[in-house]
Length: 486
Ligand code: UDP
Image (cartoon, rainbow, N blue to C red; front, top):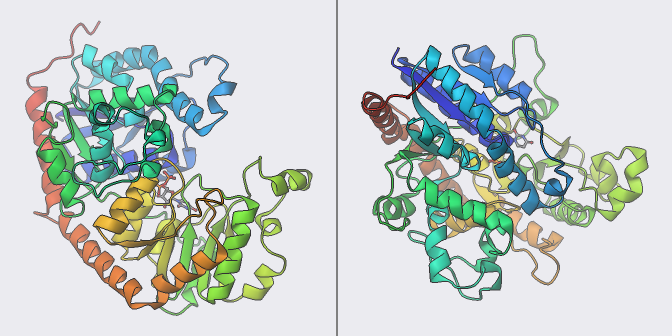
């Protein structure tokens, strides 16, 4: 054994799942390292995911950091910005216990690399103090990474907060970006959360390396800008390893288990006829928006499989139904489910997305542009309709639609609080599923699907990048010792 690689994911499902995929990928291709995933106890990790991975990859170790007491943090989850802030803060509060655990883990097996999610930026100081080479695993794409690393430069270039800007923002390798498409968390420099992103961008540029869930030919323009040093202040981007696309293979079913109802339903639908609508692990809509969507879908007469969640607690209709344990059907137009029966299916809250996207009956995907969802669509050759909701998803849309041309986009109403009208959805769905433009998008996505397969084949760019990363870890580990392990 050459020692161990420690992975330190942040708790969000997309981030944890993606980091775990990286761990599996390392174990599948490089047997000389052990892989341990360090898990925060607060919030509790997704045990379902961990159990599933432990079953297929018993050699991956999950190490739970001991629980810590948190200060009263009600205010931290009171808004999206505060929720993000609390994610950064919870990691920082774990630093003393992380230090102890890194020291004790180093006693049993030399820790050769520490791979952290960007939300775990506070841990960088701990690993640096122990002389452990620290890499960031960026769970979004190279385009997201380029814009992230470019935050310090943007601060100098534009004197105002993005929310107050009226000119397109120029990011190397990116088409011009409207200020409205910048992530909410960095749009207002006066918010505390902004400083966390700024500090993270500065530290990332000083790390041992950047591992990105993408592949070289996928985001060529931003990767070139990154590698040319155009996104970091001193022009020296750390080595950037594009090892993806790493996507979950889907749980599948064990012998004897019944396939989920929506997959059985897909079996009976014509090839590529079904539109799948799913908005990540956290996407929710108001009752008004759900109704517009339902009306738009009904008018298209397209077959659909739609993951619907109850609207957020502040939604008026939800408040009125609060006592009645509302189900999603209560928020859809009267009679919608009956009228669309046979050609449409509603799945409440969560669908087996990877299995759905890999099903031959699916011909289009309305997505919130979360990076895992984008990669899953590309890996299964499904054209997309982009409807971003939170985090860096609007930036992802710009790159997907304008640069890569792998998706069409919905247009949100500026006058009406970002609402996407029934008419707008109807038109875009028809365009995606029935027009020449939609077919051209599908052809491009399928070409990227082939490129993704090639990148992950023997001799392909992503497997070569992984080998290069492992070589770099081995080379460094001979130079570095973890000091004073008593
Ligand atoms: N997902 C799923 N079923 C759902 C919604 C989401 O399996 O009903 C999975 C999806 O396949 C993806 C992940 O959850 O792997 C969401 O990650 P993504 O980066 O797309 O978005 P996030 O949830 O981080 O916003």
